[in-house]
Image (cartoon, rainbow, N blue to C red; front, side, top):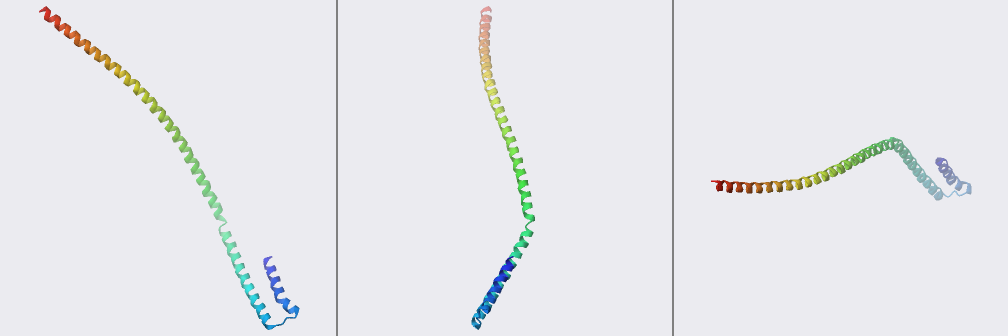
Length: 141
């Protein structure tokens, strides 16, 4: 389609001076030079179109590969998100377990202090009882 339009323009450009009766050599030379320039531009544009078509054909497989890579990255992202969710649940469970252990340690510490106090009281009573026994023995002798 473009080639036909360019060819028609070239013909009109070339033939119009002849039809109008303009046979001036200088104008004919300018027209011929312009025609050659237009032909060079046409050839350049045709080569660019061919190169672009070739590149487009060569890259036709690339979008498929890119989509495949995107799909793989999406799967990896989903797997990482799932792993992150699992780790968050494990962290929450570990935190709850640590809080339970802390409460248990505080309770055991209180019990230990109470038992230590009982032992201290019993030792004190034992010392008093030993003193009383010693006093009784000394009185009996």
